[in-house]
Image 1: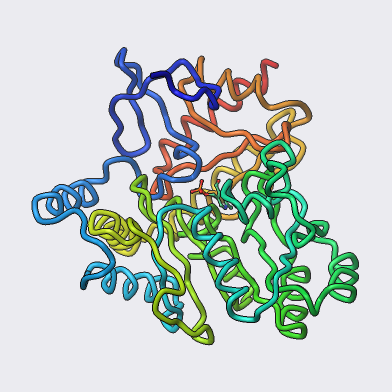
Image 2: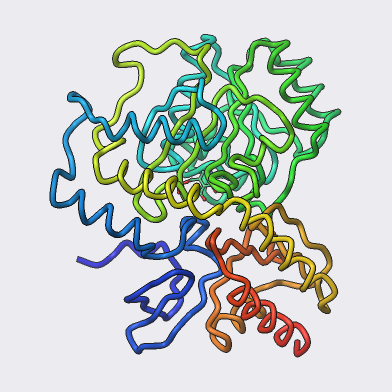
Length: 379
Ligand SMILES: Cc1ncc(COP(=O)(O)O)c(C=O)c1O
């Protein structure tokens, strides 16, 4: 059997990883400034994370959600504390798309309405409803198109008000990323977010903050929208939550009523996933990782801001979009093949997406800064 060929692959085969570095099968070392799509939050193979997972494997790795699992309660408690959202309830699942799928469904159960507002440039995942609120025709299949999904322009308050005026009473929810990642690190204005919140309240629509990429400390806040003091009704998370172990979460405001069977999953919240997520939170707290993300992000921006060919830098914490005056692919390839540094791209071809581990060290950022300087000075 062959693999279904849907991924264009770099010709690199990583076989070992530690901290912010990877090694391939030929022993070549690479600096990871992309974290495998923003997944690596506390660095590869963090010793505490490794030890906790190995220890759990010796006990029990899985049983279904029909029995007690104290690890889920411990995870919810620690997540509530570190995020400052102790009054929210947690539903555990396996991925970002699944978290959004459950959020959209829960909103619709809650208010009985069936339309969803989303924004240009959005990416919310590839499952049915999640991809319907994703602004990329290439990945939306005909079966996913439906007039229930309404698009409005990013950061455009006038258009937002028009949509609510016409369809507000039918809108079940509004889904928005804390910071758009795949869209090219697009930061919402505080006025835009505040207006969305106000209109959601007025029209009884549920505000869903997708923090799958911008969450878990990456922005320098636990969740990016918290910087603006906005209260979300539902928050979705995944990626950095398990540092590579698949896990997703839906944080649910206490106003939502739970009932048996309303949501469910076979694998969500399994023992190994919970241990991985608890280890991430422990390391985030013990090593002041969010503060580090804030500091290192600021340092990188200051060092690179005057480099040639950079048009703008959009950044919060260690979620960095470097907009070049050209397609970024040549720069990205040069960083990878000549300097052995992984970086990311985005739907905006000019934007280089930088998402290192949140505990990146200054000397590691210097490797990236020096390499970027050399590449940009020579194109
Ligand atoms: C903001 C956002 N939401 C949802 C997803 C989907 O997550 P997953 O690939 O885990 O389903 C992504 C993935 O890139 C994302 O960036």
